[in-house]
Length: 126
Image 1: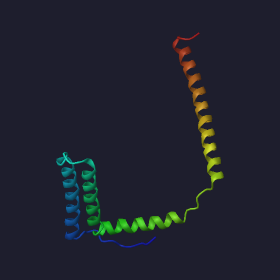
Image 2: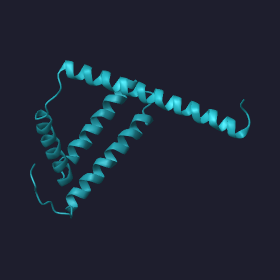
Image 3: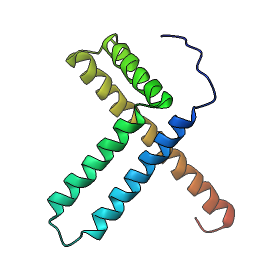
Image 4: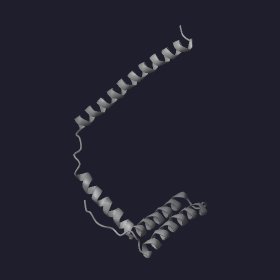
């Protein structure tokens, strides 16, 4: 991973871009409902276009560039993962199911004995 020192203060341009992208998304949502007489497909496509525009604007800010770099580094890390094969996955899944069943059975028996004991203590059972 890259260790980079990032400045804490955002420039005024970044703040303006972030606010503008938020305004675009809010305006897109308002337009989606305002133009309710139009077909749903056109409204959804317009909303998607506005969200893509807002994301594109956000990616030009310092925070957006940092998020994009994080996503690229995450993609590289996922490639390094050694994934289990089919047999290991099936074996692990069956083991989890067996353990859940056993723990459920133990809790059921414990609940049954505790309920029996409480009924004896309260005089409701004989």
